[in-house]
Structures are given as C-alpha cells and as structure tokens.
Image 1 (cartoon, rainbow, N blue to C red):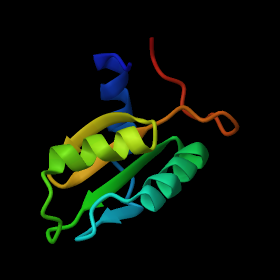
Image 2 (spheres, rainbow, N blue to C red; image 1 turned 135 degrees about the vertical axis):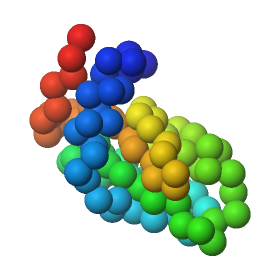
Image 3 (cartoon, rainbow, N blue to C red; image 1 turned 90 degrees about the vertical axis):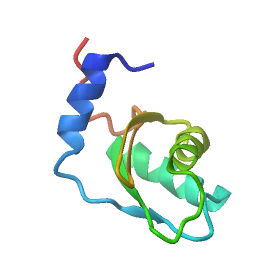
Length: 97
C-alpha cells in the first residue's frame, strides 16, 4: 500500500501526463487490463480516462482497472484514473518514504 506522502508525490508526477487508455461503453475488459499492466511495466505511472458513454460507476471502473492490472489506484479525479505499479525491469520512479 502507498502512504499519503507517496500518493501526493505520484499525483504531482502524473500531473503532466496525458491519458493513454480510454474506458468506453464496453467497460473494463480482460484484454484492456492486460494492456494496462504491460504499459505500467514500461511507464510505472499512467492515466486512463473514463469516457462519458461509459455507464458504470467511475469508482467501480477505477477499482476494476487497479485490480485487473494489479496496480495501486493513486487518484480518481473527474473521469481520469491514475494508476501506479512498480516496474520490475524499468524502475524510474523513486518513492519518498
């Protein structure tokens, strides 16, 4: 689990990122969470936008994305989800203690 200090740090790091995935009408699929997990291995920190045509609760979508990709939910702001997962091969982000 991330501490409050680490989440604040990651939110600041994520601020300038653009969403690289979109969750639309089809909702969260296994294929999508696999792709997100692969992207997290490369980038560690990503943004995902939940489109207006998605009828699921955004909190449930965020939780499903985090669980499916085995990542930490850093933030859900508006319709944007920020996920973090420490990379095994491409570690770039050093979290504060």
